[in-house]
Image (cartoon, rainbow, N blue to C red; front, top):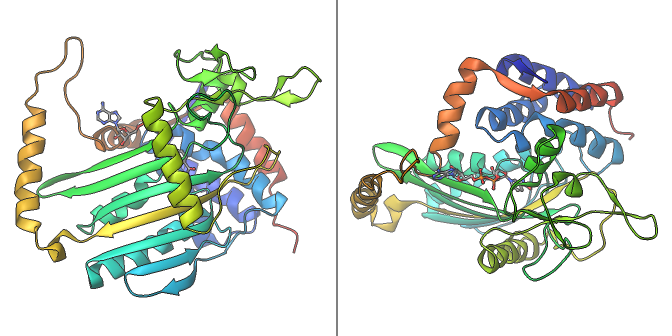
Length: 356
Ligand code: NAD
């Protein structure tokens, strides 16, 4: 069972819960619109289903409503920022605005953002940069329950560490590659579990390190030998290659930003912190703009001429599926499964401002 809600109505509902948790109307609107945009883009894992977790994080004291980004160091093209545990949707946009301004001024900007609460869909930040004609590269780590196993390991040691590359393409919609380094996003396992679905082989291992198709192993604790709740883990995509990229995200998004890496046993905290290294490049100032435009266009045209694989729907470019889903869901509304809706209703009941 599920329900279908128009995007504006859903955003209104989410914003009212965020305000009940102490957010200003402006902050509530930014966060709500960001979550609904993730649903509209087809990434329900990073949409309004996160709201109960945010309410818990505020109540737990790990997420600070109305916190803004703090500039720790500013050398012009190097920016060191602290998200001060504010909503990632808010401090992430503030950080991108600063970084975009500096890249416009200096031709490039290397920006670190530590201690942001959950940044949500990283592609959103790349989309802000490519809309200004900039190339954007993001490496992100996740400080939360470690749900992804290192290649060759049998338990979770780090998060779903996303990586994102946005490239503006002259005269056409941009390339926006945005993915978790786990075989699939953790939130997608929550959605599959809520919908009672099994998942493909090769995504998951159970609490004993054995392959499984049950998404519940990373959503609800499994009884361990001594009665302690244990979780299974997600596997990285592309075996050792995705694993290597996940480690790079931890080293760059976690260690280099100063936000910290994960190296402790799982706890029950609901707070999710992200660290993000962002590299912004202005092709106009690099002096290669004309060649970049021509060569990028020629390459994209070339790959699009590949005939569709048998039974498939042809070649797509990263960013297209999200844009197509946005058009469709803006028209049809957003489908929310019963379990997710029940969790949102429960969270609404316990929403209150943080203790001061
Ligand atoms: P995914 O597996 O759906 O991959 C998405 C990427 O692949 C997009 O760039 C999309 O345009 C591209 N793509 C999809 N189908 C394609 C096709 N047929 N041809 C070409 N390109 C195609 O995404 P995911 O790994 O499940 O990640 C989902 C979201 O979760 C991302 O937005 C990511 O940023 C976010 N995330 C956030 C965190 C966090 O802590 N903030 C952690 C993990 C993931």
